[in-house]
Image 1 (cartoon, rainbow, N blue to C red):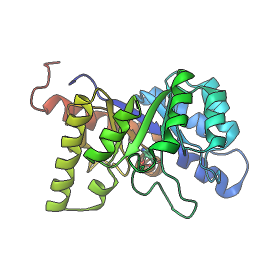
Image 2 (image 1 turned 90 degrees about the vertical axis):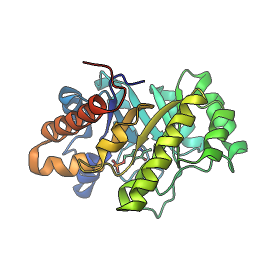
Image 3 (image 1 turned 180 degrees about the vertical axis):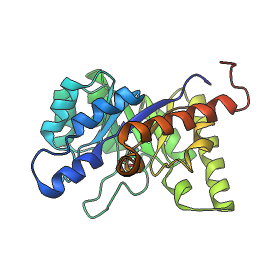
Image 4 (image 1 turned 60 degrees about the vertical axis):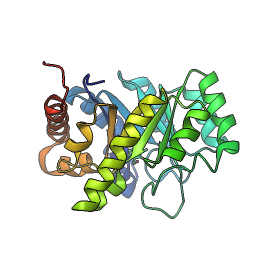
Length: 251
Ligand code: PXP
């Protein structure tokens, strides 16, 4: 459990900048290749219904270009299911999606939406795609995810990043407890959303968490220090947190 923590780099916002002007620059696939060189263990991309950043052709180009696993974030719609089945990424992370939101707000209501999620999850799994569900650190949602046969849950760290002081400590405790419970239920535990250099270490120190998915901060920081440097620094902080965590194996 204390083995090296994987870093999935989300390259959506390279595409956001590209799309601000149209055209082909900057290319998110170029960013994905650089991310791999800098130490990313996987690439994450969210194909949204409104295609505000990643496009359909980006998904195909990523599948061809990258050497690490692609984690494709999608809403549980018939259209997105067909796209995932066509490209067969390593994993599909099902997220809630609202057209008017700026980013993914809150986790998926797995407990309340089990009937509509079940066929999507089954078809993805039948195609050999690992299924991840993006949820709040909440026992009821975790039970429902396990019930539906999810391989992975990704715990939403947005609230943890948004609050400060005692509220952040409380939220971290919720995430740590949810990570232990995820592991007990036999699912792989990932975490992400809103993580920065300042917030990543306590989450990285949770031994049951095996992957963090980080995007917006890394792409923003790349403006100042370059993409490889921002990823390398994040990677170093994650590794340090892991090495210093109680019960860590000696290197
Ligand atoms: N994980 C999931 C499921 C997400 O939807 C996102 C945002 O697209 C992230 C991780 C990464 O969040 P951020 O861009 O804030 O690092």
